[in-house]
Every structure is written in structure tokens, then in C-alpha cells.
Amino acid sequence: MFTKTDRKVLFKSPPTIFTDKLISQEARRSKALEEQKRRRAQKFESSRQLDAFADLNLGNSDDDGDLEDEPEIIREGVSGFVQMVSQPVETPSLSSDAHNHETVQAGKRRGKPRRKRIKAKPSKWADKCMYAELLEMNEEAHLWDNQSGDVIDGLPRDLEAAWVAVAPVPTGKRCLAVTHQSAGIVGISPNTTLRSRVLGKMLLPRFPSSLPPLTVLDCILDVNWRDNGIIHVLDVLKWKGQDVGDCETPFRFWWRDTRLAELPKPPLPSGNFSFTAPHATADNSSQNAEPLSHMPTSERDRYRFPYPTSFVPIPYHTDTTLTSLSSSVIPMARSTREISVDIPVLVSLPEFISHDMAVDGTHDSVTSRSTTSVIARVDSDGLLLYVSHASYEEGTSPLSCWIPNKAITELPELSGGSTGHDSPLDVFQRLVQRRAVRNLQLVVGLQDSMDI
Image (cartoon, rainbow, N blue to C red; front, side, top):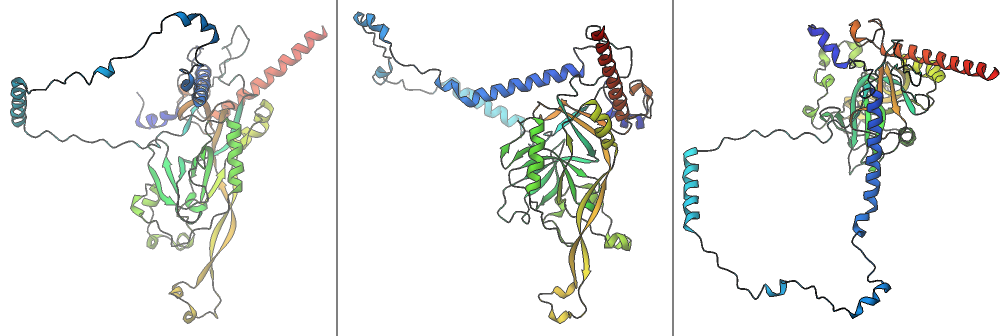
């Protein structure tokens, strides 16, 4: 039996490595992609509204002239004679009165019914994120496909042509950024909420952002967002009410980068900013925040973001050849990303400005705010792979694969034959290099056979 600590780390562990093609991840991925194609075609056909024209006809044809001599059949129903028939008068029966009396007496004997518990209605944002499956990999060299000669290593067969890589994926909390219609000025009036991935609960009260209304983004809230104000944008579901989730992966990522680059830079929140309903926040970091009186002076003077202000897109790579993966994408998935952010700095006003010249109580703080650019370092959590031709799919899907750069478990039997300290990214890199070497050998062998 596993200990309590082992059970906690097993929730991310991959399923058993399957060698049966009928239940492999590759087969489930192909089935999910075909299901998406079927739903897309069905949606397209329904938008054409062909069913509305199914009962239409062009009248009698000219070829029906031979039937003029036949008597015409009058197709008239009996609806016109209904009014001529007198309606029967309903008389209450004695049996129904007796039955109602017995029902009332039985209700008095039973007493008051027990009040049923009303279950809370699930949020409409629950389980809306496209959650990637852990890529099933196997380094056992004896697993061969006798028909095609390919090694069943778990890597997609079309990895170099039909996939998009996202790296480095930052560490943080997965969530949805949802914007609403707001009557105020964009960037000043609160219009954005963050929803959790599983239950769709509100992580923060509504806060202002420069995002347009009716926009839904798949995001990762940075671990240190209180210090840098960063929220990472992974994907886009909807933009200004337009559904973008049905588009293919490269277009969604291009749309995400282009639209985020067009947004104006929002004003930074003041140091004394407070939500209208502080008790409604579900963020643990704000609930467990240490009082200012118990903080050190350096921590007390440091600026803390009350809500995320910088929506930063995560880099994506359409070149997923084995050479590009080994030389660029995988090293990037291991590295720390540096992002420039603006942070307010308190600056003292000149001494010649007296307190008497202040207006409306501004003498309480004789400091003004200016901004300075600092470098925020974001740790990487791994690598994501998306099928290029797939659209955004809610819930866990094999159309997106997750390769973390940290070891999932220390149990050797769950690490696919590799050592317990190897991360899935290490295994992925070795399999990519092995496939590249094997492809090179096939090319050399083909050239030798042609020379012969």
C-alpha cells in the first residue's frame, strides 16, 4: 500500500503504459479529432438551415397535364363540423370527490413534508478550460511495430508536421479571465473576473483591465502576481463576443498575440486600492496575508499589486521538427523567462510644497507615484503540445499533451522504466534525440540502397 505522501503525488501520475493500439493515447487522440470534425460539420450544416426548405415544392409540373381529366379530390377535414356538435357537460362524479377527501385525510396524517436540501447550482464556468493529458512515453526499446517498423515510444507520429509547442509554461494557478459589460471607462471601471478551472469559483472580485467586454481567456495566474502583477495568457476562447475557440490552434495563438499587443497599457492601481467587497475574494494569498504591523519594514514599503494588471502571452512555436525541439523548444522549457513590468515607486515631493497648499486633505500623504521598469523572473513548469488542426475543447482532452520539467513521483514503477529522478521532459528529450538518430539512419540506408 502507498503511504499518504505517495498518494498525494500520484494524482499527476500518467496511466499505465498501453501497448494495445485500441486504447492507446494515439488512438484516443485520433478519435477525439474525428469527433471534432463531425461536430464542426454538423454545426456548419445546421447554420445553413436546410431543414427549413425540406417541405417546399415548386407546384405541379407540366407533365401532370394528363391527369386533368381525373376527378379532383377535395381534401377537407372535419374541422368545420366541430362547432355543430354540442359539447358534453362535465358533471363531477362522486368517486372523484371521495378520492379527493381521502387524499386530504392522508395528507393530514402524514404531517408537514420534510424540507429538501437544495443543492448549489454549479457555475457555468466550471471545467471550461482545455486541460492537457500527460504525454504517455515509454523508453523500452523492444516495443516495435512489425508492420511499419516504428518504435512505440508514445511520441506522436506526426510530431514534426501537425503540432504546436508552447514553452516555457509558467508555474501558477490555471483560471479563466472573463470580462463583462461595464458602463465606465475601460481600464478604470471594474470589468474582469477570474474563475477557477475546476469549479468555476471567483478567485478575485471584479477588477479593472484593458480587455474588451465579452472576452474569455484561458490564463495562468502567476505565483508571484502580488509582486509583479502578471497573469499569463495561454489561449483565447472568445474575444468581444466572437467565438474564437472553434478556430485551429495556430490561428488562436496568432489572434491572442495580435489582440493583446493592441491593448493600451492600463493605469497602475494606487497603493490604497481596495475592492468594494473584500470578503468575496477567494484568493488564499490575500486571505492569509500578514498584517502590516507584523511585517518587516522592507516588506511594508514594497508595492503589492491588488490585482493582476499585465496580460502576458505565453510563447508558442509552430516549428516542431526534431531539430527545433532539441535545440530551441526543450531548452526554453527548462529556462527562466524574464519579463519587464512597471511597478509604482513612492517619491517624496519637494520640501518647498507646504501642507497648507494641499487641497481636500491631500496633505495626509506628501508623496507622489512614479513608475519604474523591473525584470520579473518567471520559473518554467514544462512544455505543452497542441494538435494544430484541433479546436479548443472543454475538459481533459488528448488533443493537448503536458510534459512537466519536474519529476512527478519517486516511485520507479511509475516512471516508465526510467530512473526516479528523471522528469518527463528528460524522457521526452531522449526520445526526440533517439527518433532523430533513427531518422538519420533511415536516410543514410536509403541513400546506400539507391547507390547500389
